[in-house]
Amino acid sequence: MAFYEECDYLFKAVLIGDSAVGKSNLISRFCRDEFRLDSKPTIGVEFAYRNVKIGDKLVKAQIWDTAGQERYKAITSSYYRGALGALLVYDITRRVTFSNLKKWLQELRHFGESELVIVLVGNKSDLGHNREVTEEEGQEVAEREGLCFMETSALENLKVEDAFLQMIMQIYEISS
Ligand code: GDP
Ligand code: MG
Image 1 (cartoon, rainbow, N blue to C red):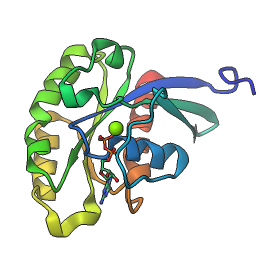
Image 2 (cartoon, helix red, strand yellow; image 1 turned 30 degrees about the horizontal axis):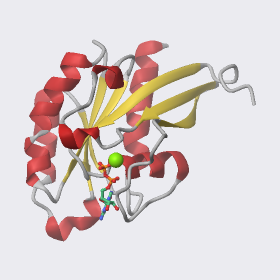
Image 3 (tube, protein in one colour; image 1 turned 180 degrees about the horizontal axis):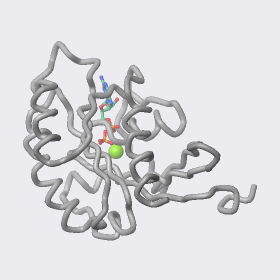
Image 4 (cartoon, protein in one colour; image 1 turned 30 degrees about the vertical axis):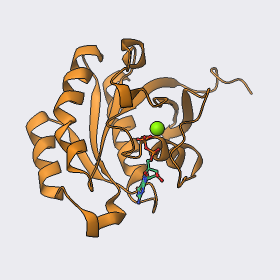
């Protein structure tokens, strides 16, 4: 297959946020419609692709995953380089992952491109009974920081598509 010739646009996007918030599962859900109960980073695979049709254009989103470096705060600037979009993910059942958003935003704004599209994602919405962060709190941070916001469940496949497409559409509008 003529990999690069067949798409009209190729974007890089990254996922960022604390360890175990569900970044890898959001990517596998969006790109392959798969979910894993264990939390093993896919060794050797740095990114996944998904094609999206926007009007008569074919957009290929190249979505980068960390290999677990976020655990050691060792994400390098090359991870962010050239990325036009980011999903900033926290876990609605772990308050600390929400408190750390400030730190991730600083890093994104420091290393990211100037026109970076950021979508804030509160993942694991299927675990409402263990919720430590309300949807309103997520919304507030998003409004304050000028981000889009969505609660998702990679497990139940809720709003995952919406979150990625929201980001991809915005990138497309800026870049086309
Ligand atoms: P990462 O470290 O941010 O890449 O997180 P992972 O994708 O590896 O997920 C960490 C753990 O959370 C795994 O045990 C997943 O099965 C689980 N997980 C991920 N997304 C969801 C979700 O939407 N709902 C629930 N209940 N569990 C999830
Ligand atoms: Mg991961």
